Image 1: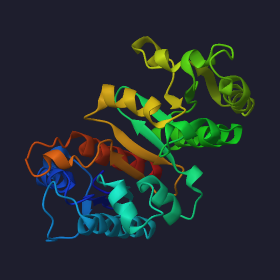
Image 2 (image 1 turned 135 degrees about the vertical axis):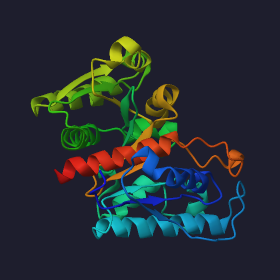
Image 3 (image 1 turned 30 degrees about the vertical axis):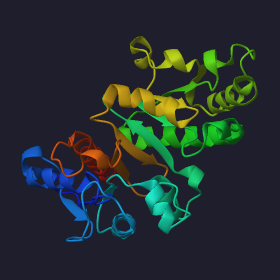
Image 4 (image 1 turned 90 degrees about the horizontal axis):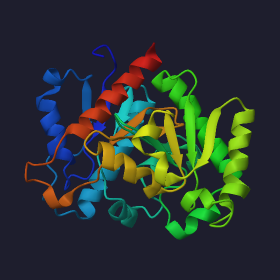
Length: 295
Protein backbone atom coordinates (compact mmCIF):
# COMPACT_ATOMS: atom_id res chain seq x y z
CA UNK A 1 0.00 0.00 0.00
CA UNK A 2 2.78 2.49 0.89
CA UNK A 3 4.33 2.05 -2.58
CA UNK A 4 1.26 3.41 -4.33
CA UNK A 5 1.18 6.86 -5.82
CA UNK A 6 -0.84 9.02 -3.41
CA UNK A 7 -4.63 9.05 -3.41
CA UNK A 8 -6.23 12.42 -4.15
CA UNK A 9 -8.73 13.17 -1.36
CA UNK A 10 -11.12 16.11 -1.68
CA UNK A 11 -12.62 17.69 1.42
CA UNK A 12 -16.00 18.19 -0.26
CA UNK A 13 -18.04 21.23 0.76
CA UNK A 14 -15.86 22.99 3.37
CA UNK A 15 -18.96 24.02 5.33
CA UNK A 16 -19.78 20.35 5.90
CA UNK A 17 -18.09 17.61 7.89
CA UNK A 18 -15.55 16.77 5.17
CA UNK A 19 -12.69 18.99 6.39
CA UNK A 20 -12.82 17.82 10.02
CA UNK A 21 -13.09 14.17 8.99
CA UNK A 22 -10.12 14.45 6.63
CA UNK A 23 -8.10 16.34 9.25
CA UNK A 24 -8.85 13.62 11.81
CA UNK A 25 -7.70 10.94 9.36
CA UNK A 26 -4.52 12.81 8.43
CA UNK A 27 -3.53 12.98 12.10
CA UNK A 28 -3.93 9.18 12.31
CA UNK A 29 -2.66 8.27 8.82
CA UNK A 30 0.32 6.23 10.03
CA UNK A 31 -1.63 4.60 12.85
CA UNK A 32 -4.41 3.57 10.46
CA UNK A 33 -1.94 2.14 7.92
CA UNK A 34 -3.48 4.06 5.03
CA UNK A 35 -1.88 4.65 1.62
CA UNK A 36 -0.29 8.08 1.07
CA UNK A 37 -2.84 10.87 0.70
CA UNK A 38 -2.88 14.18 -1.16
CA UNK A 39 -5.62 16.40 0.25
CA UNK A 40 -7.28 18.75 -2.24
CA UNK A 41 -9.26 21.78 -1.08
CA UNK A 42 -8.83 25.50 -0.65
CA UNK A 43 -6.91 26.33 2.52
CA UNK A 44 -8.03 29.26 4.64
CA UNK A 45 -11.22 30.04 2.75
CA UNK A 46 -13.72 32.10 4.81
CA UNK A 47 -16.28 29.34 5.36
CA UNK A 48 -18.36 28.85 8.51
CA UNK A 49 -19.11 25.24 9.51
CA UNK A 50 -22.75 24.38 8.99
CA UNK A 51 -23.42 27.48 6.89
CA UNK A 52 -22.92 26.60 3.22
CA UNK A 53 -22.95 29.34 0.65
CA UNK A 54 -21.94 29.97 -2.93
CA UNK A 55 -18.27 30.29 -1.95
CA UNK A 56 -18.21 26.91 -0.22
CA UNK A 57 -19.92 25.27 -3.19
CA UNK A 58 -17.36 26.84 -5.54
CA UNK A 59 -14.53 25.51 -3.35
CA UNK A 60 -16.01 22.01 -3.56
CA UNK A 61 -16.39 22.19 -7.34
CA UNK A 62 -12.86 23.56 -7.86
CA UNK A 63 -11.35 20.86 -5.64
CA UNK A 64 -13.20 18.14 -7.52
CA UNK A 65 -11.95 19.37 -10.88
CA UNK A 66 -8.37 19.68 -9.61
CA UNK A 67 -8.38 16.21 -8.05
CA UNK A 68 -9.77 14.57 -11.19
CA UNK A 69 -6.99 16.19 -13.21
CA UNK A 70 -4.39 14.86 -10.75
CA UNK A 71 -5.65 11.31 -11.15
CA UNK A 72 -6.06 11.47 -14.91
CA UNK A 73 -2.51 12.80 -15.29
CA UNK A 74 -1.10 9.91 -13.25
CA UNK A 75 0.07 12.14 -10.41
CA UNK A 76 -2.32 10.27 -8.09
CA UNK A 77 -3.48 6.66 -8.30
CA UNK A 78 -7.11 7.10 -7.24
CA UNK A 79 -9.69 9.65 -6.21
CA UNK A 80 -11.60 9.78 -2.92
CA UNK A 81 -14.24 12.49 -2.82
CA UNK A 82 -15.70 14.19 0.23
CA UNK A 83 -19.44 14.95 0.34
CA UNK A 84 -20.84 17.96 -1.53
CA UNK A 85 -24.18 19.75 -1.66
CA UNK A 86 -25.49 18.96 -5.15
CA UNK A 87 -28.12 21.70 -5.20
CA UNK A 88 -25.58 24.35 -4.16
CA UNK A 89 -23.14 23.40 -6.93
CA UNK A 90 -26.01 23.26 -9.44
CA UNK A 91 -26.61 26.95 -8.78
CA UNK A 92 -23.08 27.58 -10.07
CA UNK A 93 -23.12 24.92 -12.79
CA UNK A 94 -26.68 23.96 -13.83
CA UNK A 95 -25.32 20.87 -15.62
CA UNK A 96 -24.08 19.45 -12.31
CA UNK A 97 -26.25 16.54 -11.15
CA UNK A 98 -23.80 14.76 -8.88
CA UNK A 99 -20.13 13.85 -8.55
CA UNK A 100 -20.64 10.55 -10.40
CA UNK A 101 -22.02 12.33 -13.47
CA UNK A 102 -19.30 15.00 -13.21
CA UNK A 103 -16.65 12.29 -13.37
CA UNK A 104 -18.25 10.70 -16.43
CA UNK A 105 -18.21 14.07 -18.20
CA UNK A 106 -14.60 14.71 -17.14
CA UNK A 107 -13.53 11.33 -18.53
CA UNK A 108 -15.40 11.86 -21.80
CA UNK A 109 -17.88 9.04 -21.19
CA UNK A 110 -21.68 8.88 -21.43
CA UNK A 111 -23.18 9.39 -18.01
CA UNK A 112 -24.89 6.00 -18.30
CA UNK A 113 -21.45 4.35 -18.27
CA UNK A 114 -20.61 5.72 -14.82
CA UNK A 115 -22.25 3.25 -12.47
CA UNK A 116 -22.69 3.94 -8.76
CA UNK A 117 -22.11 0.96 -6.48
CA UNK A 118 -22.56 1.10 -2.72
CA UNK A 119 -20.24 -1.32 -0.96
CA UNK A 120 -20.05 -2.29 2.69
CA UNK A 121 -19.06 -5.29 4.80
CA UNK A 122 -22.58 -6.76 4.50
CA UNK A 123 -23.72 -5.81 1.01
CA UNK A 124 -22.88 -4.44 -2.42
CA UNK A 125 -25.75 -2.83 -4.29
CA UNK A 126 -26.20 -0.83 -7.50
CA UNK A 127 -29.14 1.43 -8.46
CA UNK A 128 -30.08 1.37 -12.16
CA UNK A 129 -31.47 4.90 -11.95
CA UNK A 130 -30.11 7.43 -9.50
CA UNK A 131 -30.74 11.17 -9.50
CA UNK A 132 -34.28 11.40 -10.81
CA UNK A 133 -37.80 11.60 -9.44
CA UNK A 134 -39.40 8.29 -8.50
CA UNK A 135 -42.20 9.01 -10.98
CA UNK A 136 -39.62 9.07 -13.80
CA UNK A 137 -38.05 5.69 -13.01
CA UNK A 138 -40.28 3.38 -15.12
CA UNK A 139 -39.69 5.42 -18.28
CA UNK A 140 -35.92 5.46 -17.72
CA UNK A 141 -35.62 1.71 -17.33
CA UNK A 142 -34.83 -0.17 -20.51
CA UNK A 143 -33.47 -3.50 -21.66
CA UNK A 144 -30.28 -1.86 -22.90
CA UNK A 145 -29.72 0.15 -19.71
CA UNK A 146 -30.00 -2.92 -17.48
CA UNK A 147 -27.77 -5.03 -19.73
CA UNK A 148 -25.15 -2.30 -20.20
CA UNK A 149 -24.87 -1.38 -16.53
CA UNK A 150 -24.93 -4.98 -15.35
CA UNK A 151 -22.05 -5.79 -17.72
CA UNK A 152 -20.07 -2.86 -16.27
CA UNK A 153 -20.74 -4.16 -12.76
CA UNK A 154 -19.71 -7.69 -13.76
CA UNK A 155 -16.42 -6.49 -15.27
CA UNK A 156 -15.62 -4.28 -12.27
CA UNK A 157 -16.23 -7.03 -9.73
CA UNK A 158 -13.80 -9.25 -11.65
CA UNK A 159 -11.10 -6.61 -12.16
CA UNK A 160 -11.29 -4.56 -8.98
CA UNK A 161 -12.60 -7.04 -6.40
CA UNK A 162 -11.07 -10.30 -7.61
CA UNK A 163 -14.42 -12.12 -7.97
CA UNK A 164 -13.90 -14.53 -10.87
CA UNK A 165 -17.57 -15.34 -11.52
CA UNK A 166 -19.74 -12.61 -9.98
CA UNK A 167 -23.27 -13.55 -8.96
CA UNK A 168 -25.66 -10.71 -9.78
CA UNK A 169 -29.15 -10.61 -8.25
CA UNK A 170 -31.50 -8.21 -10.01
CA UNK A 171 -34.52 -6.77 -8.18
CA UNK A 172 -37.92 -6.12 -9.64
CA UNK A 173 -39.39 -2.63 -9.77
CA UNK A 174 -42.87 -3.32 -8.44
CA UNK A 175 -44.09 -4.92 -5.19
CA UNK A 176 -43.67 -8.72 -5.30
CA UNK A 177 -41.69 -8.23 -8.55
CA UNK A 178 -44.96 -7.40 -10.31
CA UNK A 179 -46.72 -10.61 -9.25
CA UNK A 180 -47.05 -11.96 -12.82
CA UNK A 181 -48.14 -8.59 -14.18
CA UNK A 182 -50.89 -7.86 -11.69
CA UNK A 183 -48.82 -5.05 -10.07
CA UNK A 184 -46.99 -3.80 -13.14
CA UNK A 185 -45.47 -5.24 -16.29
CA UNK A 186 -41.91 -3.85 -16.15
CA UNK A 187 -40.63 -7.18 -14.84
CA UNK A 188 -42.18 -9.09 -17.76
CA UNK A 189 -41.46 -6.61 -20.53
CA UNK A 190 -38.10 -5.09 -19.52
CA UNK A 191 -36.29 -6.66 -16.58
CA UNK A 192 -36.71 -10.40 -17.26
CA UNK A 193 -35.68 -10.08 -20.94
CA UNK A 194 -32.57 -8.13 -19.87
CA UNK A 195 -31.67 -10.89 -17.40
CA UNK A 196 -32.10 -13.47 -20.17
CA UNK A 197 -29.69 -11.50 -22.38
CA UNK A 198 -27.12 -11.31 -19.58
CA UNK A 199 -27.33 -15.05 -19.04
CA UNK A 200 -26.89 -15.65 -22.78
CA UNK A 201 -23.68 -13.61 -22.51
CA UNK A 202 -22.35 -15.87 -19.77
CA UNK A 203 -23.13 -13.61 -16.82
CA UNK A 204 -24.59 -15.24 -13.72
CA UNK A 205 -27.67 -13.02 -13.33
CA UNK A 206 -30.84 -14.00 -11.49
CA UNK A 207 -34.25 -12.39 -10.95
CA UNK A 208 -36.34 -10.36 -11.07
CA UNK A 209 -36.36 -10.80 -7.28
CA UNK A 210 -38.94 -9.16 -4.99
CA UNK A 211 -37.02 -6.32 -3.38
CA UNK A 212 -38.66 -6.79 0.01
CA UNK A 213 -36.93 -10.15 0.50
CA UNK A 214 -33.76 -9.69 -1.55
CA UNK A 215 -31.83 -8.05 1.30
CA UNK A 216 -32.84 -10.48 4.05
CA UNK A 217 -29.90 -12.13 5.86
CA UNK A 218 -30.51 -15.58 4.39
CA UNK A 219 -30.60 -14.12 0.85
CA UNK A 220 -27.48 -11.95 0.95
CA UNK A 221 -25.14 -14.92 0.85
CA UNK A 222 -26.55 -16.06 -2.50
CA UNK A 223 -25.15 -13.16 -4.54
CA UNK A 224 -22.15 -10.84 -4.77
CA UNK A 225 -24.07 -7.72 -5.77
CA UNK A 226 -27.72 -6.72 -5.84
CA UNK A 227 -28.92 -4.51 -8.67
CA UNK A 228 -31.88 -2.31 -7.75
CA UNK A 229 -34.12 -0.31 -10.02
CA UNK A 230 -34.01 3.06 -8.25
CA UNK A 231 -32.06 5.10 -5.70
CA UNK A 232 -33.77 4.29 -2.42
CA UNK A 233 -34.31 0.63 -3.29
CA UNK A 234 -30.50 0.33 -3.30
CA UNK A 235 -29.46 2.86 -0.66
CA UNK A 236 -31.93 2.10 2.13
CA UNK A 237 -30.56 -1.42 2.77
CA UNK A 238 -26.89 -0.44 2.53
CA UNK A 239 -27.38 2.50 4.90
CA UNK A 240 -29.39 0.37 7.30
CA UNK A 241 -26.71 -2.33 7.36
CA UNK A 242 -23.43 -0.48 6.85
CA UNK A 243 -24.02 3.23 7.41
CA UNK A 244 -20.69 3.93 9.09
CA UNK A 245 -18.68 1.78 6.66
CA UNK A 246 -20.55 2.22 3.39
CA UNK A 247 -18.50 3.28 0.37
CA UNK A 248 -19.77 4.80 -2.86
CA UNK A 249 -17.68 3.41 -5.73
CA UNK A 250 -17.95 4.63 -9.33
CA UNK A 251 -17.64 1.74 -11.77
CA UNK A 252 -17.00 2.00 -15.50
CA UNK A 253 -14.50 4.87 -15.40
CA UNK A 254 -10.85 4.78 -16.50
CA UNK A 255 -9.98 6.16 -13.06
CA UNK A 256 -10.67 4.82 -9.56
CA UNK A 257 -13.14 6.81 -7.47
CA UNK A 258 -14.62 6.12 -4.06
CA UNK A 259 -16.51 8.25 -1.59
CA UNK A 260 -18.04 7.85 1.88
CA UNK A 261 -21.70 6.94 1.63
CA UNK A 262 -22.95 9.93 3.61
CA UNK A 263 -23.69 13.56 2.97
CA UNK A 264 -22.32 16.90 4.11
CA UNK A 265 -24.09 16.71 7.52
CA UNK A 266 -24.21 20.49 7.82
CA UNK A 267 -26.22 20.12 11.04
CA UNK A 268 -23.25 18.65 12.92
CA UNK A 269 -20.38 20.32 11.04
CA UNK A 270 -17.79 21.88 13.32
CA UNK A 271 -19.07 20.13 16.44
CA UNK A 272 -16.37 17.46 16.45
CA UNK A 273 -18.82 14.55 16.49
CA UNK A 274 -18.71 13.45 12.84
CA UNK A 275 -17.52 9.86 12.51
CA UNK A 276 -14.60 9.23 10.09
CA UNK A 277 -15.34 5.51 9.57
CA UNK A 278 -16.94 5.78 6.13
CA UNK A 279 -14.16 8.04 4.80
CA UNK A 280 -11.54 5.65 6.19
CA UNK A 281 -13.35 2.77 4.46
CA UNK A 282 -13.45 4.74 1.20
CA UNK A 283 -9.71 5.44 1.39
CA UNK A 284 -8.91 1.80 2.16
CA UNK A 285 -11.07 0.57 -0.71
CA UNK A 286 -9.53 3.02 -3.19
CA UNK A 287 -6.06 1.91 -2.12
CA UNK A 288 -6.95 -1.78 -2.41
CA UNK A 289 -8.38 -1.33 -5.91
CA UNK A 290 -5.36 0.72 -6.98
CA UNK A 291 -3.01 -1.95 -5.65
CA UNK A 292 -4.96 -4.71 -7.41
CA UNK A 293 -4.87 -2.84 -10.72
CA UNK A 294 -1.15 -2.19 -10.30
CA UNK A 295 -0.53 -5.90 -9.86
